[in-house]
Image 1 (cartoon, rainbow, N blue to C red):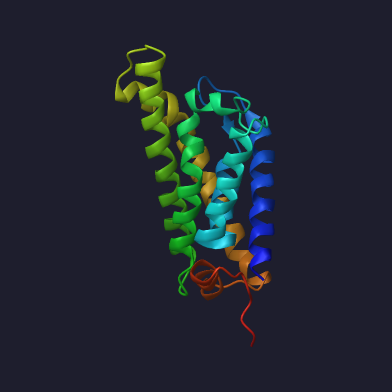
Image 2 (image 1 turned 90 degrees about the vertical axis):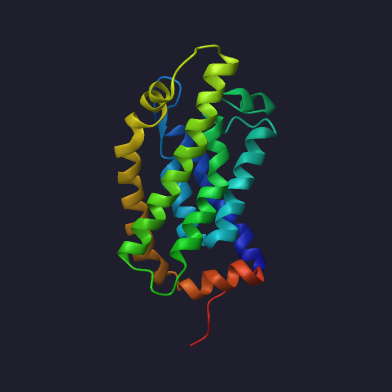
Length: 196
């Protein structure tokens, strides 16, 4: 059954690609549905396979497929927004890890979404700051970088986090997945449903 985890990881990697192209242009960092998909990957697949889905997404982009907002290829690492992409595997892992507890209710899922969004902004804004100051030579302060790469997206991303948490709360039971199932998938490499 470990193949099911790999298949689902590939499916969520594909969904992340789709989320890339559903975007609203902003300077430096476009607004996309990627955050929603990354959070859902963690919620639905757990930490191991959620992270794997985003590692696969990064591999596709770095291999040259145009799956990033800036295109694809190794040159993407020099894009101002690459830090956000780089945060996706860790984000999915954090969301999956927090939400897989057996007592996972609305508050735990909300906490998981907020923790995931925090990881995206920490790594994304840090790389944006370094890129703009040391590669682009813009000489911007921390507050200016936050105005460019965090503040315009904070409310939309919190809304996406809320949507992802609600969708996961409703669909995980329908798919027969519980926190215990995701824990077993994380520690034993299998994504299986426990027999009644």
